[in-house]
Image (cartoon, rainbow, N blue to C red; front, side):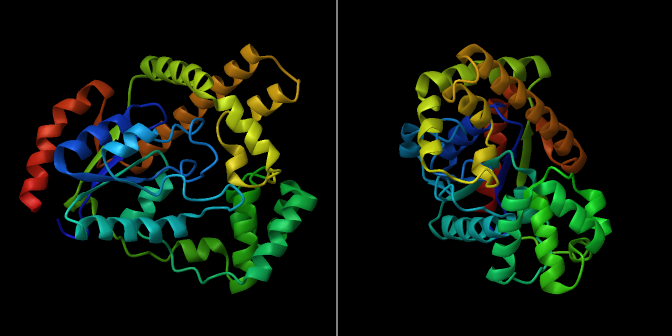
Length: 310
């Protein structure tokens, strides 16, 4: 395969895309490369539905659980690591199969990222500390004064993106919005790849989400959150916003019961999946949309595609 071709599988949470990727990897000699922003964190295998140890033993997996929760992983870092993983996979004679639910990661690979200069560590740390001490709303007001264009685009409750906008404006003297208008260079070209969105019906997705969370509880999700709390990681870091973390933290703190915590977790996951589908419909129009039951019927087509690229 060329260095711009891959199998791309996106979809909302609990859609069955990971199982699809695993079957394909076994059929074509593939390596599965993560494109999920929460599955990069090592502390939450169960709660983020990372591939099991058994799954990882069947085919190679890359970019899963390799980042400590104390770090804030970025799309820029992902793009660099995923590009390296794809290149290494191809040099090994294997097929890169990129799978996940984080649309921004796919866009980073297929459209490239704006060439924003590296932010000096002192500026980055200062704004992150300000977010912890002052809160997102205060920093959003600061952003409104310094960069009203970006302030209008961001929610006052989104500290990670607000900090990013502030650090870029201070370090470069330009709005993040200006940088984002500069096109990047894609590493994977969709037109040379096979790109799928696995999207179950709303009813099936709801059932899959509910059943999966019950299974997560049985597999030790509560113990994972207990261990995460013991690390005393700041609430501003992404790992603490993983689906299910807050309801289970409340349960461990005695503020709610198991049934309520489980229902809250399922509800927030359903809402998140709905937002994912909306985003995918707006940004992945040219991708092949299939439901969960159709995934097996496309395996032969993909095998033929791989053979044509050999």
